[in-house]
View 1 (cartoon, rainbow, N blue to C red):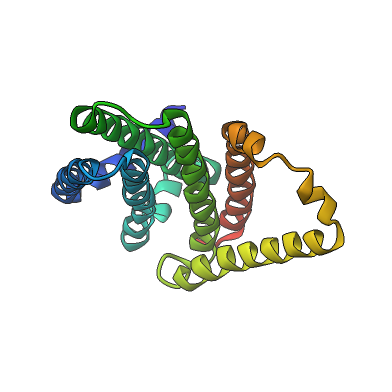
View 2: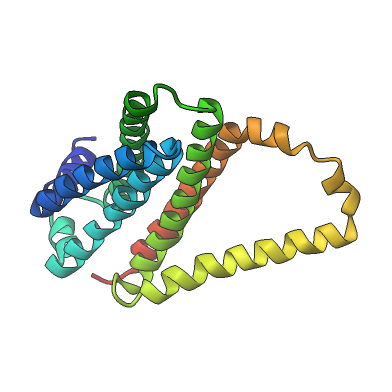
Length: 224
């Protein structure tokens, strides 16, 4: 546990190198949310902006590790490959989770101050859960690509693989719609939207577990 904690702190220290950019980005997001709230209820949009920027920013920690060749150094210490991979996934998840919480809190406060209320708070939170799951899918698809090909060489695969998966999923759904149209007619979309947080929870667990197992297997076979 202490090893995982130390690895997490290592990645957090990396963020100190561009804390000025983070503070500037937070201020700009707050200003944009405040201006937008005067015209529309952008509680959801503001939250998603925080999630996308700061959540995806956690991937940058891989670049620092690759440039510093830190894995070779870490493995010379009493640190296992499992610890390294697990700490990365914890860092990615915690960074995304904290980002969406901060985004929701900041957007909620600003929208209340500017407009006096947040319309459809329950629906807005459900959309935030869906956005969090979407970003989780992208990051969980990116991390194994980084372990396999590296940060620079894996950029193309990080785009192609998620896009291919989404395309195949869409094709599968279209085929089902053509073969069994009655299934879709019997689906209560409003009910599905209401229980979407539970669906998102299951999907997030699946994304992270499957991605972690793939990355660990890749890293286990990797020569360092």
